[in-house]
Length: 354
Image (tube, rainbow, N blue to C red):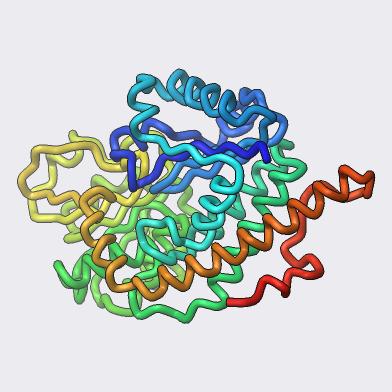
């Protein structure tokens, strides 16, 4: 079992390091092609960077990956070593299954991670980076995440970073009749916009580089779409800003922030961050690091869900391991297999159900 996973997450990596480890969609193919492994999978979310590979020598693979990360993202070897975690073999599989279910997320049980992992899987497949046994591991992780979300009841607590930030804003700032700006048009902003629609009667702007996407989101949420270039024109009209883009650079720079002349709270949910550091005393910025204490409170509220998710992960890892061993035994005796693995294999029921 030659799986090796190197990961950076909210648990061990500060925000200033995490935002350095960023790969844009245009860079993804080149990144994959530069990795000296036949099968590999990379997952990048706002709170997580995970790279898992299939290698005949996992220990050597771990050293190679850390060297590549240090060189590509301009980290010292010490920074890479301190802020990363490495998992081998079955432990790498278990970690990945935990990620897919939301067990490892800052917001316990979050569902957004599953769609992010599915997107990353499709990208890896289209590039030709993923094959064989590792392909099967990722498919099984996706199956496990889907199973967990099907079994787990809807929670009365926030289930994503977007919902957690919105919950914090409601409890600490109040959103009724507030003037709000949303920057971005991805899933995080969509979740926030949907939530705001149900609790806010004030003016809401949606700003995005692609104005058509901004208009589409604005139409669904009774908001007003503006191009990104118009942010400076309306920024002094809003009380609260939520920003979550995939841009590799700042969206709100200090020159623009210096012009703000009334109190405003900005929720920066992007990594790399969208908001440049500012000394304007009228601005309060809440980035993901600042929200960590609220995430911890969420964990305490959802301890039951955590235990349930852990049980699901443990079961599926056992099922996967059984299947993996059976397939390897068949190969040794010359029985043909498809090389990937199937979470619905016959005989799995002997391991029980959650």
